[in-house]
Length: 479
Figure (cartoon, rainbow, N blue to C red):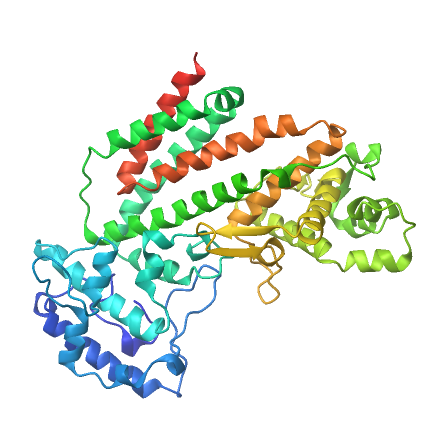
């Protein structure tokens, strides 16, 4: 069901089997006309919420204030024309229609009767999406491949991902889509993990044979394109959106890693960490006591000035420390959610379940945040430079939703920078070559492969590409 309100439930919702007597444009137009009247009756009387929440677990509600009067007063015939306009000489008409919008996403009217019923469900869903849920958004433009960027994806912490999220969540209420997703996602995950493991074992070969790997990627792409993939239109749309999100992540992260690689280069530290930090594990319950130490403030600020009490208080209230504490809170959440027994991303557990974190890691995470956001004022690019935002903004604490984590892309970027600083600390400045070889270049080649894989026509092509590229990389590594 699209809406929580029972009066707005419909046979055209994805989870229902559409009766034969409703399988026509005329019946669909009648249904949408009746829905419009019901919604209009609710205006200013109650909040109408979608049944599924967005990627940040917020309710999506009908913005009555944004819906123009023309939407409320459309006749059944006008609704029908907006739903579907016949092509002329194989081309969509100039005027907008929902079927034209779907065509922009590669979804065409099917010949098969069962598929046609699903097509009517898509027309219904996108009409409601277009005119009642996101009346001020051009959702078809947002979803076009030309406008792919991570901020539009379903990743938690993104800015504009609720469109993609709402579509995907509703498509998954169809049992066939859900079954296909479970099977295909497992194969995709296995392919991605296999490639990452292979690349991790051959960093020198990745560095030395980068151009050859790119050439083999092109060859594998051509092989994959020779295969056809036939799926139902609901699964087809679901795969399109999955690939849209994954491509956006890989493309945008690749752009940020390669545009300014110097941001991972650190000068030798002015204030070096105490040697004791390299052997010290701090109980999570005593983090504040550790952070209040003079040497922690000096290291994180890279300042040799005498630390006053007011400096400590200001430091404890800084965004750098707040962000670090948010990382810890998320790590605890991650440990509980996935029932980890020994460690999370940062926290390690003893036999009694008490959490500890490596002292040097604490200081490095805070110092890296300070350097990137306050000193260098790094900006994150997305959509091929169409959107540029300060890293501080993308890593910002969600005051209203403290359990929310920033988007995966910016966290990955931040953690790579933090690891570079960690190596700088333990290698006494002689670290950048090691970081490039073993961390930066493998990440770049991973994203280049992921980008190519998710730019293919379907997830079947993606899975084939990942498996073939694994064979190519093994061949290179065996030389």
